[in-house]
Length: 354
Image 1 (cartoon, one colour):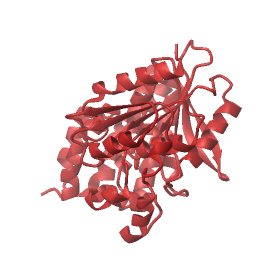
Image 2 (cartoon, one colour):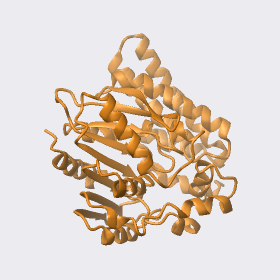
Image 3 (cartoon, one colour):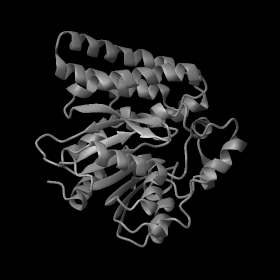
Protein backbone atom coordinates (compact mmCIF):
# COMPACT_ATOMS: atom_id res chain seq x y z
CA UNK A 1 0.00 0.00 0.00
CA UNK A 2 1.34 3.46 -0.90
CA UNK A 3 2.61 5.60 1.98
CA UNK A 4 0.82 8.81 2.94
CA UNK A 5 3.30 11.01 1.04
CA UNK A 6 2.62 9.16 -2.19
CA UNK A 7 -1.11 9.44 -1.54
CA UNK A 8 -0.65 13.19 -1.08
CA UNK A 9 1.43 13.39 -4.27
CA UNK A 10 -1.49 12.16 -6.35
CA UNK A 11 -2.90 15.68 -5.89
CA UNK A 12 0.08 17.12 -7.80
CA UNK A 13 -1.23 16.20 -11.25
CA UNK A 14 -2.57 19.60 -12.30
CA UNK A 15 0.64 21.30 -11.10
CA UNK A 16 2.85 18.92 -13.06
CA UNK A 17 0.91 18.77 -16.30
CA UNK A 18 0.16 22.49 -16.65
CA UNK A 19 3.88 23.17 -16.23
CA UNK A 20 5.24 20.77 -18.81
CA UNK A 21 4.94 17.15 -17.67
CA UNK A 22 3.11 14.88 -20.10
CA UNK A 23 -0.18 13.73 -18.49
CA UNK A 24 0.39 10.08 -19.37
CA UNK A 25 3.86 10.28 -17.82
CA UNK A 26 2.28 11.41 -14.57
CA UNK A 27 -0.17 8.54 -14.60
CA UNK A 28 2.45 5.97 -15.60
CA UNK A 29 4.99 7.00 -12.96
CA UNK A 30 2.48 7.35 -10.15
CA UNK A 31 1.19 3.82 -10.79
CA UNK A 32 4.66 2.44 -10.06
CA UNK A 33 5.21 4.18 -6.71
CA UNK A 34 4.49 2.70 -3.31
CA UNK A 35 7.09 4.54 -1.16
CA UNK A 36 8.26 8.14 -1.15
CA UNK A 37 11.88 6.91 -1.29
CA UNK A 38 11.17 5.76 -4.87
CA UNK A 39 10.03 9.19 -6.07
CA UNK A 40 13.19 10.81 -7.38
CA UNK A 41 14.55 7.75 -9.15
CA UNK A 42 11.25 6.96 -10.88
CA UNK A 43 10.77 10.49 -12.17
CA UNK A 44 14.41 10.77 -13.21
CA UNK A 45 14.09 7.63 -15.32
CA UNK A 46 11.07 9.08 -17.09
CA UNK A 47 12.85 12.41 -17.58
CA UNK A 48 15.80 10.66 -19.22
CA UNK A 49 13.53 9.42 -22.01
CA UNK A 50 12.80 13.04 -22.95
CA UNK A 51 16.43 14.05 -22.46
CA UNK A 52 17.63 11.33 -24.83
CA UNK A 53 15.07 12.39 -27.44
CA UNK A 54 16.20 15.98 -27.09
CA UNK A 55 19.89 15.26 -27.38
CA UNK A 56 19.25 13.09 -30.45
CA UNK A 57 17.25 15.93 -32.01
CA UNK A 58 20.08 18.36 -31.29
CA UNK A 59 22.58 16.06 -32.97
CA UNK A 60 20.28 15.78 -35.99
CA UNK A 61 19.90 19.60 -36.01
CA UNK A 62 16.15 19.27 -35.48
CA UNK A 63 16.17 22.27 -33.20
CA UNK A 64 12.43 22.80 -32.73
CA UNK A 65 12.06 19.20 -31.58
CA UNK A 66 15.12 19.55 -29.38
CA UNK A 67 13.62 22.56 -27.63
CA UNK A 68 10.37 20.70 -26.96
CA UNK A 69 11.99 17.48 -25.75
CA UNK A 70 14.61 19.15 -23.57
CA UNK A 71 12.11 21.58 -22.06
CA UNK A 72 9.91 18.65 -21.07
CA UNK A 73 12.95 16.77 -19.75
CA UNK A 74 13.87 19.77 -17.60
CA UNK A 75 10.38 20.02 -16.11
CA UNK A 76 10.29 16.28 -15.44
CA UNK A 77 13.72 16.27 -13.78
CA UNK A 78 12.59 19.25 -11.73
CA UNK A 79 9.64 17.31 -10.41
CA UNK A 80 11.94 14.39 -9.66
CA UNK A 81 13.62 16.62 -7.07
CA UNK A 82 10.42 18.38 -6.02
CA UNK A 83 10.02 18.19 -2.21
CA UNK A 84 12.43 15.23 -2.18
CA UNK A 85 14.64 16.32 0.71
CA UNK A 86 15.16 12.93 2.35
CA UNK A 87 18.09 12.09 0.02
CA UNK A 88 19.89 15.32 -0.87
CA UNK A 89 22.53 13.65 -3.04
CA UNK A 90 19.89 12.04 -5.24
CA UNK A 91 17.86 15.26 -5.26
CA UNK A 92 20.82 17.37 -6.35
CA UNK A 93 21.66 14.98 -9.19
CA UNK A 94 18.12 15.36 -10.57
CA UNK A 95 18.31 19.13 -10.12
CA UNK A 96 21.59 19.36 -12.05
CA UNK A 97 19.96 17.41 -14.87
CA UNK A 98 17.00 19.80 -14.89
CA UNK A 99 19.29 22.82 -15.16
CA UNK A 100 21.42 21.22 -17.89
CA UNK A 101 18.42 20.21 -20.03
CA UNK A 102 16.74 23.59 -19.62
CA UNK A 103 19.92 25.43 -20.57
CA UNK A 104 20.21 23.31 -23.72
CA UNK A 105 16.55 23.92 -24.55
CA UNK A 106 16.54 27.71 -24.13
CA UNK A 107 17.89 28.79 -27.56
CA UNK A 108 15.46 26.46 -29.36
CA UNK A 109 12.15 27.14 -27.65
CA UNK A 110 9.20 29.13 -29.02
CA UNK A 111 10.48 32.12 -27.09
CA UNK A 112 14.27 31.71 -27.01
CA UNK A 113 15.95 32.51 -23.73
CA UNK A 114 19.37 32.88 -22.23
CA UNK A 115 20.85 31.86 -18.92
CA UNK A 116 22.23 34.81 -16.94
CA UNK A 117 23.92 35.21 -13.55
CA UNK A 118 23.10 38.10 -11.23
CA UNK A 119 25.63 39.16 -8.55
CA UNK A 120 24.15 38.96 -5.06
CA UNK A 121 25.96 39.39 -1.74
CA UNK A 122 29.23 38.00 -3.07
CA UNK A 123 27.48 35.09 -4.79
CA UNK A 124 25.25 34.75 -7.84
CA UNK A 125 21.59 34.15 -8.60
CA UNK A 126 20.91 32.08 -11.71
CA UNK A 127 18.15 33.35 -13.97
CA UNK A 128 16.49 33.01 -17.36
CA UNK A 129 16.00 36.10 -19.51
CA UNK A 130 13.60 36.15 -22.47
CA UNK A 131 12.49 39.00 -24.70
CA UNK A 132 9.49 39.12 -27.06
CA UNK A 133 10.42 39.17 -30.74
CA UNK A 134 9.90 42.39 -32.65
CA UNK A 135 9.28 44.59 -29.59
CA UNK A 136 11.72 47.44 -29.06
CA UNK A 137 12.51 48.38 -25.47
CA UNK A 138 9.79 46.22 -23.83
CA UNK A 139 8.86 46.37 -20.15
CA UNK A 140 10.08 43.48 -18.04
CA UNK A 141 8.46 41.22 -15.45
CA UNK A 142 10.62 39.76 -12.67
CA UNK A 143 9.37 36.26 -11.84
CA UNK A 144 9.80 34.68 -8.41
CA UNK A 145 9.41 31.09 -7.39
CA UNK A 146 7.79 29.45 -4.39
CA UNK A 147 9.10 27.14 -1.70
CA UNK A 148 10.31 24.39 -4.01
CA UNK A 149 9.65 25.66 -7.52
CA UNK A 150 12.47 26.78 -9.81
CA UNK A 151 12.97 28.62 -13.10
CA UNK A 152 13.01 25.28 -14.94
CA UNK A 153 9.29 24.93 -14.18
CA UNK A 154 8.13 28.32 -15.42
CA UNK A 155 8.18 28.08 -19.24
CA UNK A 156 4.40 28.13 -19.72
CA UNK A 157 3.97 30.96 -17.20
CA UNK A 158 6.66 33.00 -18.97
CA UNK A 159 5.11 32.61 -22.40
CA UNK A 160 1.90 34.26 -21.20
CA UNK A 161 3.79 37.51 -20.62
CA UNK A 162 5.97 37.21 -23.71
CA UNK A 163 2.87 36.84 -25.90
CA UNK A 164 1.78 40.26 -24.67
CA UNK A 165 5.00 42.08 -25.43
CA UNK A 166 6.75 41.87 -22.06
CA UNK A 167 10.24 40.54 -21.38
CA UNK A 168 10.76 38.26 -18.38
CA UNK A 169 13.53 37.54 -15.92
CA UNK A 170 12.83 34.39 -13.90
CA UNK A 171 15.37 33.96 -11.10
CA UNK A 172 16.16 31.44 -8.39
CA UNK A 173 16.30 33.45 -5.17
CA UNK A 174 17.83 32.48 -1.82
CA UNK A 175 16.71 29.01 -0.81
CA UNK A 176 15.43 28.28 -4.32
CA UNK A 177 16.80 26.23 -7.20
CA UNK A 178 20.47 26.82 -7.85
CA UNK A 179 20.70 29.12 -4.83
CA UNK A 180 19.20 26.66 -2.36
CA UNK A 181 22.49 25.00 -1.46
CA UNK A 182 24.44 27.97 -0.15
CA UNK A 183 21.73 30.56 0.59
CA UNK A 184 18.80 29.93 2.93
CA UNK A 185 15.27 31.21 2.43
CA UNK A 186 14.94 34.77 3.69
CA UNK A 187 11.95 36.86 4.66
CA UNK A 188 13.25 40.34 3.68
CA UNK A 189 12.80 39.85 -0.05
CA UNK A 190 13.17 43.52 -0.91
CA UNK A 191 16.88 42.93 -0.31
CA UNK A 192 16.78 40.36 -3.13
CA UNK A 193 14.56 42.21 -5.60
CA UNK A 194 16.55 45.43 -5.26
CA UNK A 195 19.84 43.98 -6.58
CA UNK A 196 17.96 42.18 -9.36
CA UNK A 197 16.48 45.50 -10.48
CA UNK A 198 19.95 47.09 -10.27
CA UNK A 199 21.29 44.36 -12.54
CA UNK A 200 18.49 44.83 -15.08
CA UNK A 201 19.02 48.58 -15.25
CA UNK A 202 22.80 48.23 -15.58
CA UNK A 203 22.98 45.26 -17.95
CA UNK A 204 19.82 45.00 -20.06
CA UNK A 205 19.73 48.04 -22.28
CA UNK A 206 17.36 46.09 -24.56
CA UNK A 207 14.47 46.48 -22.07
CA UNK A 208 12.87 49.44 -20.33
CA UNK A 209 14.27 49.39 -16.81
CA UNK A 210 11.73 51.99 -15.71
CA UNK A 211 8.78 49.69 -16.50
CA UNK A 212 9.25 46.74 -14.19
CA UNK A 213 6.58 44.35 -12.93
CA UNK A 214 6.83 41.70 -10.24
CA UNK A 215 5.21 38.25 -10.24
CA UNK A 216 5.29 35.48 -7.65
CA UNK A 217 3.52 32.20 -6.91
CA UNK A 218 3.01 30.26 -3.68
CA UNK A 219 5.74 31.42 -1.28
CA UNK A 220 6.65 33.85 -4.06
CA UNK A 221 3.15 35.20 -3.41
CA UNK A 222 4.55 36.37 -0.06
CA UNK A 223 7.84 37.59 -1.54
CA UNK A 224 6.09 39.86 -4.04
CA UNK A 225 3.91 41.82 -1.59
CA UNK A 226 6.80 41.97 0.88
CA UNK A 227 9.23 43.32 -1.72
CA UNK A 228 6.88 45.89 -3.22
CA UNK A 229 6.07 47.29 0.22
CA UNK A 230 9.66 48.57 0.34
CA UNK A 231 11.01 48.54 -3.24
CA UNK A 232 9.28 51.42 -4.99
CA UNK A 233 10.76 50.90 -8.46
CA UNK A 234 8.14 48.21 -9.14
CA UNK A 235 5.18 49.50 -11.18
CA UNK A 236 2.76 46.59 -10.64
CA UNK A 237 2.71 43.21 -8.86
CA UNK A 238 0.93 39.89 -9.37
CA UNK A 239 0.84 37.52 -6.38
CA UNK A 240 -0.74 34.07 -6.61
CA UNK A 241 -1.71 31.96 -3.60
CA UNK A 242 0.87 33.20 -1.15
CA UNK A 243 0.67 33.17 2.65
CA UNK A 244 -0.13 36.13 4.85
CA UNK A 245 1.56 34.50 7.82
CA UNK A 246 3.62 31.42 6.97
CA UNK A 247 4.42 30.65 10.58
CA UNK A 248 0.71 30.77 11.42
CA UNK A 249 0.13 27.96 8.92
CA UNK A 250 3.04 25.85 10.19
CA UNK A 251 1.14 23.16 12.08
CA UNK A 252 -1.30 22.67 9.19
CA UNK A 253 1.34 22.27 6.47
CA UNK A 254 1.71 18.90 4.72
CA UNK A 255 4.71 16.93 5.97
CA UNK A 256 6.49 17.21 2.60
CA UNK A 257 6.09 20.99 2.56
CA UNK A 258 7.25 21.46 6.14
CA UNK A 259 10.28 19.24 5.58
CA UNK A 260 11.19 21.18 2.45
CA UNK A 261 11.08 24.46 4.38
CA UNK A 262 13.30 22.99 7.09
CA UNK A 263 15.93 22.14 4.47
CA UNK A 264 15.53 25.29 2.35
CA UNK A 265 15.84 27.48 5.45
CA UNK A 266 19.06 25.60 6.33
CA UNK A 267 17.59 24.35 9.58
CA UNK A 268 18.12 20.99 11.22
CA UNK A 269 14.77 20.56 12.96
CA UNK A 270 11.20 21.81 12.88
CA UNK A 271 11.84 23.67 16.13
CA UNK A 272 14.75 25.52 14.52
CA UNK A 273 12.78 26.30 11.35
CA UNK A 274 9.60 27.57 13.01
CA UNK A 275 11.00 30.97 14.15
CA UNK A 276 12.29 31.49 10.61
CA UNK A 277 8.85 30.69 9.24
CA UNK A 278 7.35 33.22 11.66
CA UNK A 279 9.34 36.00 9.96
CA UNK A 280 7.46 35.42 6.68
CA UNK A 281 4.51 37.53 7.77
CA UNK A 282 2.87 40.56 6.15
CA UNK A 283 1.25 41.95 9.29
CA UNK A 284 2.17 45.60 9.63
CA UNK A 285 3.75 45.56 6.16
CA UNK A 286 0.78 45.26 3.79
CA UNK A 287 -0.29 48.84 4.52
CA UNK A 288 2.96 50.05 2.93
CA UNK A 289 1.94 48.67 -0.50
CA UNK A 290 0.95 51.69 -2.58
CA UNK A 291 1.43 50.46 -6.17
CA UNK A 292 -1.12 48.33 -8.08
CA UNK A 293 -1.30 44.70 -7.00
CA UNK A 294 -3.36 41.77 -8.31
CA UNK A 295 -3.96 38.95 -5.83
CA UNK A 296 -5.16 35.49 -6.92
CA UNK A 297 -6.39 32.91 -4.41
CA UNK A 298 -7.74 29.38 -4.77
CA UNK A 299 -10.99 28.76 -2.98
CA UNK A 300 -10.02 25.11 -2.36
CA UNK A 301 -6.39 25.87 -1.50
CA UNK A 302 -5.42 23.84 1.56
CA UNK A 303 -1.84 25.13 1.69
CA UNK A 304 -2.40 28.91 1.62
CA UNK A 305 -6.14 29.37 2.17
CA UNK A 306 -8.00 32.23 0.45
CA UNK A 307 -8.61 33.89 3.81
CA UNK A 308 -4.91 34.85 3.82
CA UNK A 309 -5.29 37.03 0.73
CA UNK A 310 -8.61 38.41 1.90
CA UNK A 311 -6.78 39.61 5.01
CA UNK A 312 -3.92 40.97 2.90
CA UNK A 313 -6.26 42.79 0.53
CA UNK A 314 -8.08 44.41 3.43
CA UNK A 315 -4.82 45.94 4.69
CA UNK A 316 -3.49 47.22 1.35
CA UNK A 317 -4.12 50.94 0.96
CA UNK A 318 -3.25 51.28 -2.73
CA UNK A 319 -4.90 49.99 -5.93
CA UNK A 320 -5.72 46.31 -5.56
CA UNK A 321 -7.65 43.51 -7.21
CA UNK A 322 -8.50 40.23 -5.52
CA UNK A 323 -9.62 37.22 -7.55
CA UNK A 324 -10.75 34.15 -5.60
CA UNK A 325 -11.19 31.18 -7.92
CA UNK A 326 -13.89 29.24 -6.09
CA UNK A 327 -12.82 25.76 -7.25
CA UNK A 328 -9.11 26.53 -7.59
CA UNK A 329 -6.50 24.46 -5.78
CA UNK A 330 -3.07 25.75 -4.70
CA UNK A 331 -1.88 28.27 -7.32
CA UNK A 332 -5.12 27.33 -9.13
CA UNK A 333 -3.10 24.98 -11.31
CA UNK A 334 -6.37 23.19 -12.05
CA UNK A 335 -7.91 26.41 -13.42
CA UNK A 336 -5.04 28.22 -15.18
CA UNK A 337 -7.41 29.70 -17.75
CA UNK A 338 -9.20 31.58 -14.97
CA UNK A 339 -6.22 33.79 -14.11
CA UNK A 340 -3.09 33.39 -16.25
CA UNK A 341 -4.36 35.38 -19.27
CA UNK A 342 -6.27 37.82 -17.08
CA UNK A 343 -3.33 38.69 -14.85
CA UNK A 344 -0.97 38.98 -17.83
CA UNK A 345 -3.41 41.36 -19.56
CA UNK A 346 -3.60 43.40 -16.35
CA UNK A 347 0.20 43.57 -16.14
CA UNK A 348 0.47 44.57 -19.81
CA UNK A 349 -1.88 47.48 -19.21
CA UNK A 350 -0.02 48.68 -16.13
CA UNK A 351 3.39 48.43 -17.81
CA UNK A 352 2.21 49.93 -21.10
CA UNK A 353 3.18 46.87 -23.13
CA UNK A 354 2.47 46.98 -26.85
